[in-house]
Length: 340
Image (tube, rainbow, N blue to C red; front, side):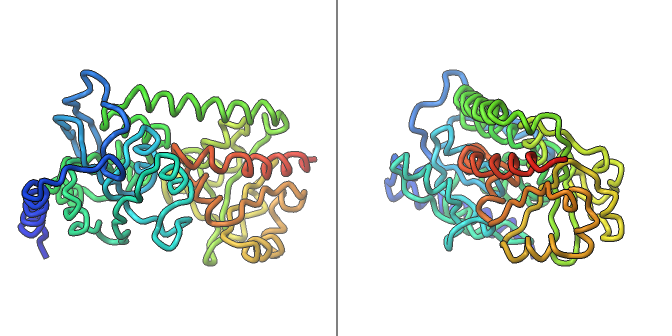
């Protein structure tokens, strides 16, 4: 089925309806910024995996897809008109807790929720928002899907690979697309300071080696240094365990599956284990295969449990990192104290 003719009609109808209604976007929940864009910010051209996207003027109706773009936009003061639902860590409407908190702080209405689908973006619901910019900076859209989205509105995709954009680059790219590069830099500076303060307060983390893992659905996943959640661990002073790279295969740029028979080779000072529930974490740690992991045997496991906390750091975002950092670092510090 070709979406192109239908999408063109949808996009045209949505824009026409908006114009005929005389309905200018409201100042709350509208995609408009709390402050004007920086002088000289537009037009701007942003390069990404599928070419370049030109944004001729300050966008007023922004739709955010994937992970992190919503957070980055709100962090620089722009509330999207539509944002993709987040099934992992979100509430019954797909709204993440730190996003809800930030909207409350801005006294802003919740944007329209775009359904999150596995195979295709929700083109019709996106078009209904009559966007003038679509941000999918950390997402899994294909080139064909990008082309379809780009027919609705100028679309900014990820810079290189799907689901692999460094979280800091999500912030800078979104800031540039919205004419808010200085505000994005301030957001990053504030987060960097918060992270540095945590690292200074917990010197026991510095120099300890770490492996970040998840045991799920009968498979064991190890996250590489290219993964944003691991990169954040490095920011706190931890170091990549040599075994993580030594055991790596070509599964993905940011993770790989490791057989249970090889878990005894996954040597690190600290094992960071992500589990949705306490029951799942307990089952994993008490399993015979987990007992072969040196950090489990030594009792130096940082158990990160609960979908909200996991979502906050996997990967972090402009809003989620500071939302979850205190609890996360406390868990890491307890594991570091157990290192023998």
